[in-house]
Image (tube, one colour):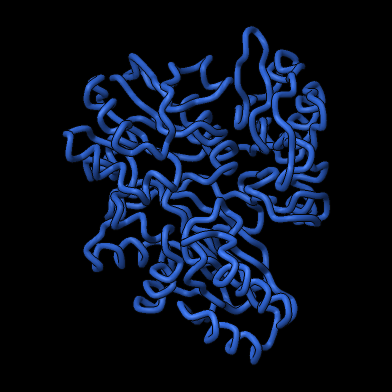
Length: 423
């Protein structure tokens, strides 16, 4: 089969690598791809948000299947456009992708169907939102309604911070149209868990649980980022909690989307908080997490392409999938200054040595002549799998230490909290 993967980051590289394992793949393409993906697939110079061009190219080049990985093209309706042209695709259509594309839609869905989440109020009027947060007991979370590159959630410890967040989003257009509606919700406390699930709209298959590390600096300090590293499985996510989540959150969400007339088919990401009152949903994503995919997919036992095809056909219950024993750790090598101002175009060295003991997924790289250069904030994801989490963490850092580029920044404590929980 001729397969196109849409996207150009570390998540897409992890998907490409996993798809390469399938014997049914005869040709693999990625749009736009990056400097590392180019070694595993043919890169197509079309941006992921060029929905019409991508759909037309896939039809003209007779792609047998398209995997739409990022949130933007999913929410823009790329799967719908592909379907119009008779090209089957993995990922939710535009209506179902609203579960990530609109936090108001997601929160209202959970409220209607009794799915546990934080209490909240939604606003499209800035003055009403400001009046509300002035009278709130803090801390609270202020969230932009739409997509904001994973940075549209502001955790506010004081009323003044909440007012500033509302002003930035609704009055100063910090996130453009995405912030013109906001959700203000209660602050939840407890261990966070990410669970990526494949679903065909009826059957739901969870992959390995994960723990993301969002803050830029050690000790969960510094600015929020798209993710500085991840481990899997998450030790806080016990078998008992997994069963509870399946019965109270996962399956009810799938059924809710069916009832709303927009069944979800694709990868449904559950961001959970394990509170003292039980697990609650922090957020939904309509796609594989990044960098979670870089830790979770290496632990997947089974043919990812067959599973994706079954999702599209509504036959996921017929495909054997399981989680491999052991653990994984992904450490992100980022550009200095990320997630704010950073320079690109820095030569990267040490990849050959790193790849002797770990997989290296490219997130922000490009090729220029014979050189591999940095081309983004998050540059590489170094992932090791091992029988134990301690071994996986050690191997990932051992491999990452071989890599070098000017200004390179890594957290040194990915997995530390999980290791403490394991004792």
